[in-house]
Image 1: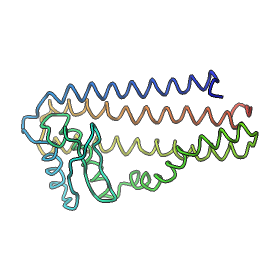
Image 2: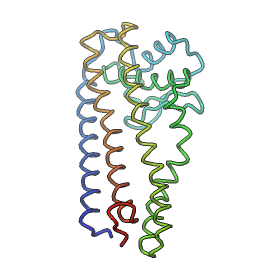
Image 3: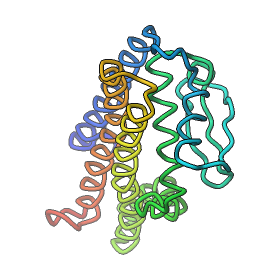
Image 4: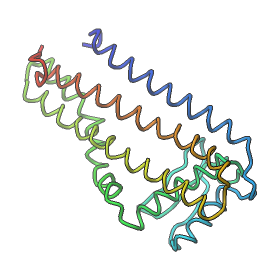
Length: 230
């Protein structure tokens, strides 16, 4: 199976999409990390300012290790920024910090796609960790039902990647809007913010497309598409 030309094509396309998106993010964040915002605020300052304006006072802002490890943890209501974006005073730092605040605002407002994504985390973990192996086991043993169960589990992971898209796109929209409304960035600086956040969004889009391609392949191997069950 692993030498199936179609499998190699699917995985190859997924790899190209992933590497391309990562390269785009790296180039964009590096470019705008060299451009300071006129207000001279750090990423942590930006996050705190937007949270304050939005009336959110129960979110903690912390520094976390790593590169582009920035995220919002709804379980503890904690916004974590990587060192470069926590202390940085660049357009990149402002954009990423504001994006993560966007998630905090989504959480505070009960944004439906975000709530759905949180509920789907266990399903997604099972789908990505066990789904494919169950499909493979079903195909090799000739147990079609088992293979179909694996496809169903993996489909849960694919659905998770699709639900993630509106969550991320909406957080970026909220970020740019908040940065402009609060006067933290100018219209010209907002173009740089958009460039950074668009590149970041591409990684989620690439992941979703790759997951869909894999799902179609495994569905075919399980006999659910094209009548192929060998």
